[in-house]
Amino acid sequence: MRTRYLAVVAVVSVLGAPFLQAQAVPDDSPAARVDAGYRRSPTLRADPFRNVMIRHWGFTLSSGGLVANNTLNLDDIGAIIFLADEDSLGFGEAIDISGLIPRGSGLNGVAEGMARFHLGGPLGGALAVGFSAGVNGFGSFEIDDQAVSLFRDGNATQEQFSLGETRGAALAVAEYGIHGTLNLKASGSDAPHVTLGFGGRVLKPLYYASGNSLLPDGGSLTITNSGSAVPSVAARIQFEGFNTPEIPNGSASDYLDQGSGFAADLLARIEWPTSGFAAEVMVANIGSLDIDAVERRETNINVSGSTFNEVFDLLQEEVLDQFGNLVKDDTLSFDVQDTVALSIDLPKVVRITASAWANSILQIDVAATAPVSGQFKSPLGVDVGTTWRFSRVIPLRFGVMMGGDQGIGFTGGIAVEGRNFLMQFYGGTLGGLFGKAKGGGGRFEFGVFF
Image (cartoon, rainbow, N blue to C red; front, side, top):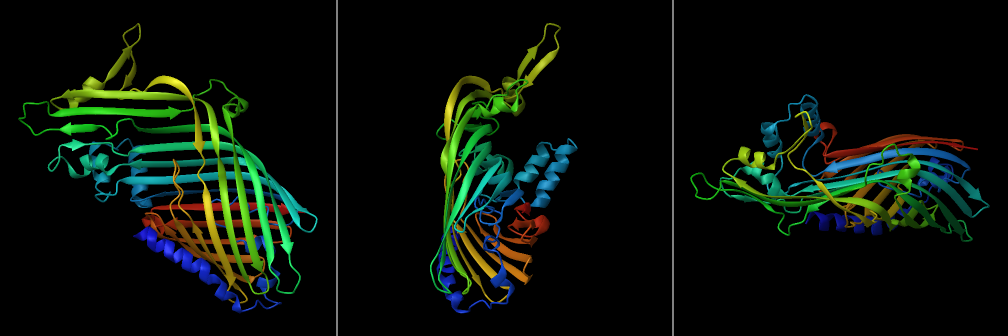
């Protein structure tokens, strides 16, 4: 129901924005004198065309990240980190933490981060080009509510617990590529400006890991009532994991030779500068990544006992050296089964944006990011942002973020956007403010133009 509501808000907001263009932007206002690249407001979400739209030759350095989960707020996560650092995160604390997860929701989260260097500028009056290099990282996890319920609810109402859809994945890639924009202007004072963007990035895997249950029902942990004739605790689990192998004493080139991929990005934007309205469609990360050698590990557990301790003892694997000293003590040992080649679909981005100047200093942006499935899911997101230009080169930004399980978040930032210099700080929370937020993120940009 929430996703449907957000979709309606996004469509109405984006399609209804053209009515805001009725008020023309005064020629002497800050809005009329803003560089075209700066009129594309920044976002916490991925945007490969952010820097190439700035039509001055120069370079920019940018970095940023975004993390979110559906249940735990920043205060909760801070407490967990503190207990872990103090070696005080025990069984009782784990039960207390699971009590924070509402019944039926489970625990899931996403993360992404980037760092990039960009060099580019205009080639003539219509074409601009930019070269970039950097690293990107993505992560996601999901702990099924069936797995959480053992600690949260106990076994008073049920005896069997499963991993269900519990899974997780992480990916880090190095990339380098080229992007360009073509600007088409029709004749007339208020004729629309059309910008077409296109580009591609060559990808090299740095790290990949994932894990999931092999059993259709997620396996089971069965706890029967005391006094039963059958064992009171039985575990039946088959879990599979993938990860790129470590390269002993390997150089950076050794990691970059583990595979390759390609991502394409497309942009179409139309803008009426004097009316102060623009609409845009962007599709990014079209492609896949091939990793040549990934270790596949597997653990198979099918044991039973009268108590938890007995089951744990059966799972215990102890390896002693020639002197009788313990050199390995793993409760769950993942053994390498084989080495496989994988093809991973990239986390695609599909975004529709509408922008309008409400008056001589205020710009309003509404963006809807469509949901894309896969290992690194991107939920439906609707961003509503405002940019206040009391001064042409020092914008102040405030907005809200809606979507996913986090609810309403808040964004804000400040920048210096000049002909020869760019510096920007932009951040936000998801699902609340400060310590009560269920996630957050930030971006930083620094640029020098010639």
